[in-house]
Length: 315
Image 1: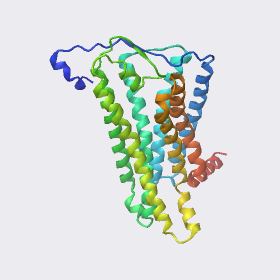
Image 2: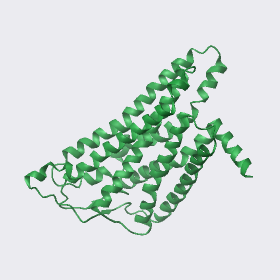
Image 3: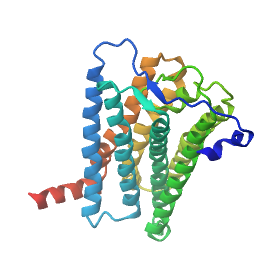
Image 4: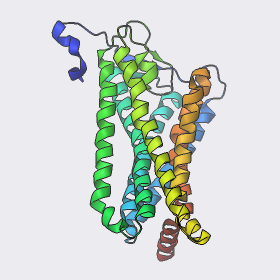
C-alpha cells in the first residue's frame, strides 16, 4: 500500500493506530438476537449458493455460458457473505470489537471487492440475455464460453483494481483522535472520515467508486432491457413474446433484489440514524446472497429440472 503514499519521499510520517474499534449498534436492547438472525440468514445463503454451484457442476446440460455467469454469481455471493457475516457475528456476539489497522484494511478490501462483483455479475448476465434475445440464431456463436469467461475475468480485474485504489488511499491518512468506526464492519466512509489530514482523495474515490461499480452497471442493465423489450415487440405472437420474456425473469429478480435495497440506502442513508443505517446495510449485504439462489432456482426452468433430476438420482 505504500505506493499510494506520495508523501513518503518528503519524510512525512503518517499516524496509524494500532487498532480500530467497531462500535456497531448503540442503545438497542437484546441486539444479540439480531446477530443470531444474521447467522441463520448466512446459513441459508451458504446452503443455497453451494447447492446452485453443485447442481451446475454435476449436470452436464448446465455448461452454457449463461450458467458460467450464474456459477460465478453464486460463488461471489458465497464468498461475500462468508467474508462479512462470520466476522460481524464474532465482533458483536462475542464482543471482539477491536481490529488491527492492517486487518481492518484487508477486511474492507475483500468485502468491497466481492460486493462490487455482485453488481458486475448482473451485467454479465444482462449481456447474455441481451444477446440471446437480439441474436437468437447466432447466440451460440457470439456468446461462447471463452467470451463469458473473458467478461467475468475483466470484471474481477476491474473490481480488484478499483477497490485496491480505494483501500490504498486510506494509507495516506493519519488518525490522530478517534479510532471508533461507526458501522458494523470496516466500512470505507466511516473510516476515512476519521482522518485528521487531507481526506480529499478518499472522499473523491468514495464518490467515484459507486458510479463505476453501481450506477453505470445499473444504467447498462436498464438500457439492455429497453433493447430487449424493443426486440420482443417485433415478435408477432403474444405467446412468443411471453416465452422469450420468461427467460429473463430470473435475471430481473436478481436485479431487483440487489439494486432496490442499495438505492434505498443511498437515497435515505444520510437522513437515517446510525442504528437504522447499520440495519439497512447489514440486511442488504446478507439478504441478497440468501435470496439469489432461492429465486433463481425457482424461476429458472433448467435449474429446477436439474435439481429434480439430481434428487431423483440420489434417491
